[in-house]
Image (cartoon, rainbow, N blue to C red; front, side, top):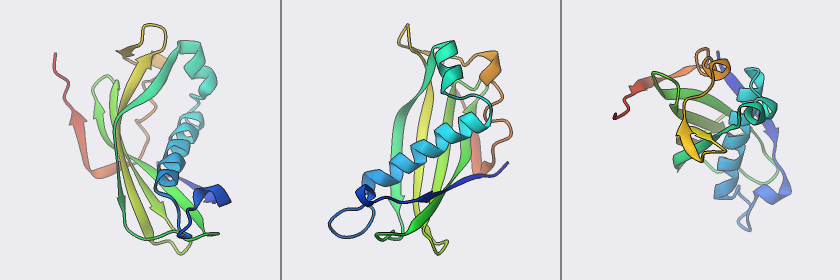
Length: 147
């Protein structure tokens, strides 16, 4: 399943050079992930119910084309890696400008944390299907965990 969100950018997304500030790209990518989880029937209410949350180990952004003041954008989400029990995941976001040109690629490597124990955890059964129907990248790989 392809997942993409269109956004009307806001004044605070831009810097004095009249292009999108670097951290705004990552904020939109994070919003897409939260909306994807909600779309898969695992909203913030379920995160609270199971006392878990997503965390990031790594986040990298490659900038390709400027997004200028007032432009609207679209951001997609593809899964680029997943462990057997879905406890670790890699997601790639592509950010497109209003003309549909690729403006940035954001890659994140994350996991689930038990918010009470403050330790990494395997997601509950109800969350095991979150990434199954997600579009995968061409370089998708199974994440091997060390015992």
